Length: 49
Image 1 (tube, rainbow, N blue to C red):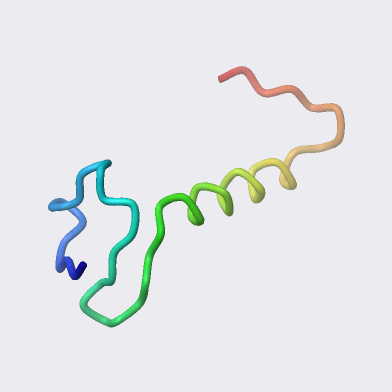
Image 2: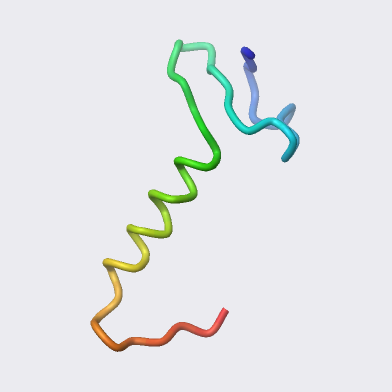
């Protein structure tokens, strides 16, 4: 699917291709963000969510 603006994406759309041709996947991006956040915390640090 091709979308020109993020405002058209619903949560049902899991992956898309932007106008520049880059492929985006919500699940892969979420996993990268969780990993980044986890590695940025000092060992033993608890985060209330």
